[in-house]
Amino acid sequence: MQEINYVEGFVKRMSTTMANISAAQVKDLREKTGAPMMDCKQALTEAKGDMEQAVVILRKKGVSVAAKKATRVTSEGAVTSYIHAGGKIGVLLEVNCESDFVARTEDFKELAHDIAMHIAASDPKYVRKEDVTEADFAREKEIFLAQAVASGKPQNIAEKMVTGKMEKFYEEVCLLEQPFIKDQTMSIAQLIAAKIGKLGENISVRRFARFKVGDAGETVAVTKPTEQKAE
Image (cartoon, rainbow, N blue to C red):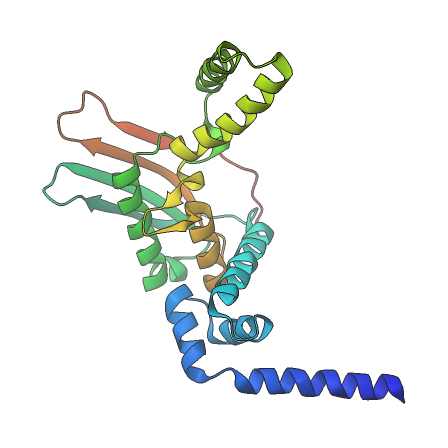
């Protein structure tokens, strides 16, 4: 009897909480995150109406969904371009997804545009951490280790410092690790994960090229292929 009363009380509390979540709150969260309406309502309910906590919940859900879909084949997509104001910087970007249907959606196009704009502003050198060449990795690690040792740190402490500095290095040069220029609280990887959660398909950045007037060269990055499977 006591167990039945506990269950009934829990259900009543949950119903009351959901009833206290207004349509305006759900609408605001959807506009802020682009997540489906039901997901927004569930996140607000779980967060007891706290908008910022609901955003965190949705981001975590997006990352979880993205991880589950990460091995699915992305053979469709689009190539988009972005020319910075004044025509001094230009970017060509290929973003892949699973179906032509998703590639034609406004959400997908918006994502590709935002990533291309971010590349123009942030000038990453690689797509993913895994794409960093062994030569570049060894060079940076050697520099950081020499700096740490020169500061008087013991070898074991210096090596730990290098690990932290390498993570910072990845954030500076790898597109997916960089904080999104329009929202510094999320990385490009998290931005993509949120769209994967909304659109229900795996999405990946295949390659990009960045050109700047006056530069002797250009940045061209192509990600290493990962094992994917059809579903």
